[in-house]
Length: 186
Image (cartoon, rainbow, N blue to C red; front, top):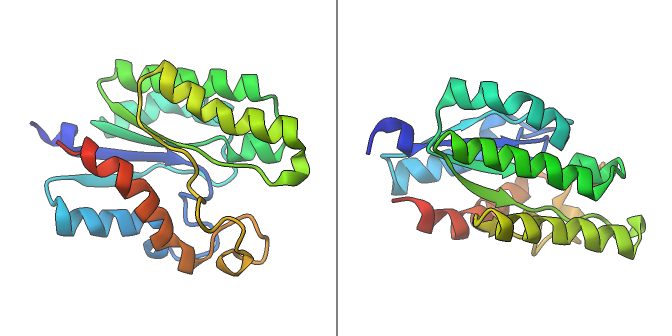
């Protein structure tokens, strides 16, 4: 395997861009540290942008794939679509196109889901959550159902905005991703 096959691109929004904290404290940096310890043949690059929506991610994906040439893409987008109440079908179409382009470029994809707070109503929150399951099945890609699972209701683990996880939550997110990522590391 060449170096490109061992390169992991994290492609996400503010949750992956370490919003509100030092970059080296975010879950992606912690994942990089874990890889150095447990799988030093792998490297990780973070191309996450605060405020990114699935349409913004779709607009940037070709350049990101060409620049980083990853063997694996961890796709963590959609949360901002949900917070803005954008149509779930549009988000699914955009994320599907990002997955297709990543796969066409030779990268395997790990899809990371997100959940919406209940104040968006049961119809929207259920459609939003199931979108990630549907995409994972359609594209036969592993899925982390929700990056915030296990602590999303614990506001002590969030920054004052109650949207962005605090430093204390970053290791929990690494664990959520690692469980599904580890078997993907060849």
